[in-house]
Image: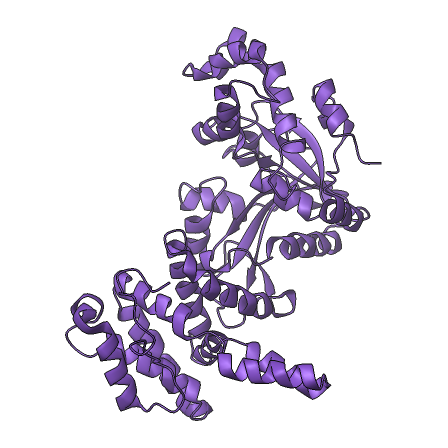
Length: 469
């Protein structure tokens, strides 16, 4: 399919912007002929729109590393200067014209079928690589190239719902980023009150679970001796945190978020802490969506904290349940629900009253039904692929944690009530069981959970989702 707004063409009219035999002048004429009357829409009146295509072709020609660095720098500047509409046009060109060289791939495949040697297999692998991936690697030669490519993938992700053809471009980004941002390249750094202000500002901006209201609020999370914050960085982006986790050191299992973040609490000496509580984990780079970072981060922090503070015995989260109330509202609206009975619906209507949680009678009536519903939501409701529907549950359970406890009205903030009817949960990371839980979850979809959680399930749901052996 052509990019939106570009007419269909006959084979003789269809241009090949990126034929290796075509020089810069031919490239310009081919592009101009194809865009035609749309030039004013997609290209600026001065050179610029066509310049980025010429720069991309120059990068692919491989003039030498020193030259490629300069061209890559100019490419990033040219892309950054494009309007959103022109960026989308360029990305659709990447989809259509920067795939694998089909003729080369067919030759390599024919050769391999006739003589399946290691050399023929290597030639086929090289031929199957898209020209986009080569382009992205050469863009990455420039200082700031990694950051620029992350921004470009953000543009792809933002436009992907409306232009599904960009999936091929996104797949190439994801393939490269999975290698560039693997654990071997990531640097773990502690974030504290002495961390440079430009990084602290990004921590405030990207905190996604419990909003940081001010610099004083941030200081309360970083400066006390019983608080920790850790972030992953990449060597090419040393002032850009990729993902960070906030940790509270406590002497017992946390059951609510407000006391954990209170400004008048009394810190405890780290040596007296027996629990490390992961209460917030936030991604900073939209362009790394789908790239595993959080599981590496938590496991590395567990290891570091065990070495730093030997008294720590338990590693646990205090986590939100962000999709619960939206799901429950949908179930209430169904004529027949597997998880909400007609009798439940009558009581659950109390949720529609403002400040229901402040009315003792309403809260007492709701509590048992909501506990049953949230247990079902976490343990029984699955996606089409068989994974938990809740994203936070999917993350922690996929990392090998155990669903340990459910807490009633543990987050009575407006956000907590709006998203989860005030519920929060503990996911327990037991170092000796992480790998086993992770494997059972990945291979059989089994959710490691405690009896304290499973007891809330209705008996008919328990039969459908028995406890893993």
